[in-house]
Every structure is written in C-alpha cells, then in structure tokens.
Length: 162
Image 1 (cartoon, rainbow, N blue to C red):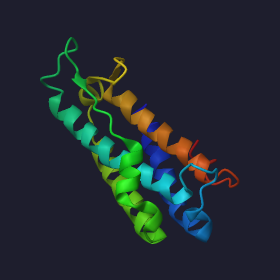
Image 2: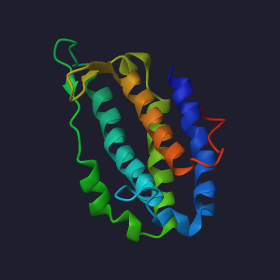
Image 3: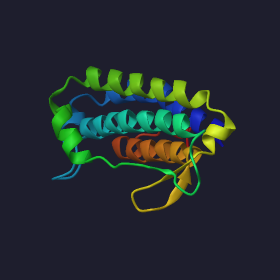
Image 4: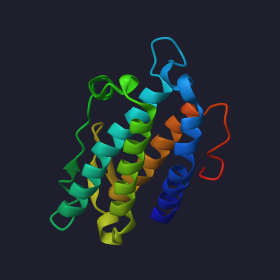
C-alpha cells in the first residue's frame, strides 16, 4: 500500500535530521574498513532519491502509453561512482542532511498524488524482473530504511517507521 510507504518516509523525515546531526564527527569514519562512512551512506541515499524521483516521474508519464508486453526499463547507476563524485565525506554534515531532506520531500510530493493507474504501471528491473511503480516505491523506502539502520545501528530512532 502506497499509504504505508508515505507514512514510513514521513516518519524518517521527522526523525533522521536531528538524530544524524547528533552523531557529530562519528559520521565521517567508515564503520568498517573499506566501507562507506555514515555520511557517505546518507549521501548514497541522496543519490538514490535523485535517481528514483526521476524514475517515478518518468514511469507515471509513460503510464498511458505503457504496454505490459513492453514495460519501461530501469537503468542502474554506479553507486560508488556517484558517492565518490559527490564528495560527501568532504561536505558539511548540514549540507548532506538538507539535501537528503529536500530530495525526499520531492519524492513525497510526487508519490503522494499518484493515481492507482499510475501505481500499476509496469517497469523492468535490470535483472529482467517486471514490477509496478508501486512496488518500486515500496522498494525505495525499504532500501532507505535498510541504510538508515546501518547508520543508526546502535540507536532506536526508526522503530516508529518500521
């Protein structure tokens, strides 16, 4: 249900900024050698929002012309390259938090007003699986929550949104 995804995204927007800010300098250190820092993970979620809001808009636009026999294909992006190119670990924490909030507010504006016919539009994932726009939105929120749990692994900020 799209309403559940919207509520979970709204809950994250209401809790993450303050809690992330409270992590302070800890956000710049990778949690495991060779992995992203917490700030880079939040930056990755910004990149995910950039790519997905575009998908959500394009898929609803193609909905009227979309044929289940020939659904639109989702193009993947190189996540590591995006995180490196955006230089998140060199950015002020506040900038990345504001970007994450702004992008997810845009996601909310787009998904809140989708009609059921738009939500039912099909698309093809890179692995060939056919899914609906509604599934893609649910997956976006689940992906976001997965990474927020990595960031806040020792904190209980997401219990209201899971």
